[in-house]
Image (cartoon, rainbow over all chains, first blue to last red; front, side):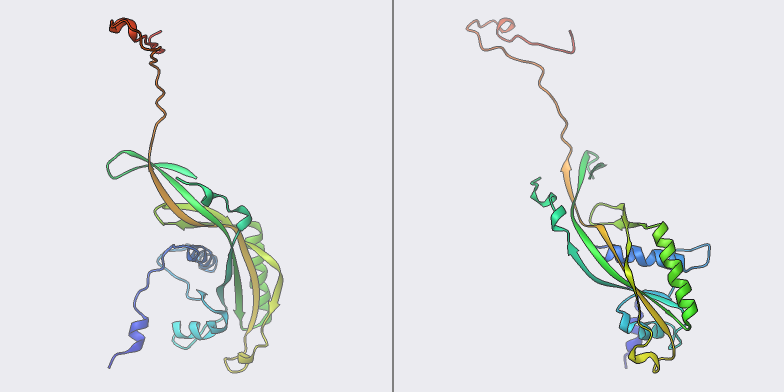
Length: 94
Length: 145
């Protein structure tokens, strides 16, 4: 019988792509702020996570073996919009 | 934004970053066991990013650059401690901060082989009927004069 939990623990490498790169930059900065000095890249602060706010308590619980440790900080991207008033570049033809 | 790199054939190549400016809105939530800790963390976060709003984002998409962007907090801080799961999940306090960045971009790289400006400094003043080449082609070589 497959253990579904093992599937979720496979390493997913977060990539700096598109708008998610900004999410990642922000959450990594927050992780660095809430880490003890010296900050190591290999150490990820589990108590700073990206995700839906209403699900965050459950997510932190999953990550910490059903024993969430407070305090923690969550980040959720609400939306993003195109700044059409500053959008000039696409008119160029290279 | 334009910078030069070496193409795989070692010839200089211009890399142009094409961008679409965007605004991103986030919600930052702080969860604690007691209110005083929550207020203290929110205060620290607000002061820290108020004084240091610039962050670096690493842009791939063929560019491999670091771009600075700024984050700003909106004025309202919402207290959502008394939500439905407050009792079920144990007592905790939560405050939500909303923040945005209006100098973010959607990136794309565009590669162009570098073309140098090479002005033609040798001018022909018409074609004479004289077939003597030394007569028909009057060359102005600015470098040798």
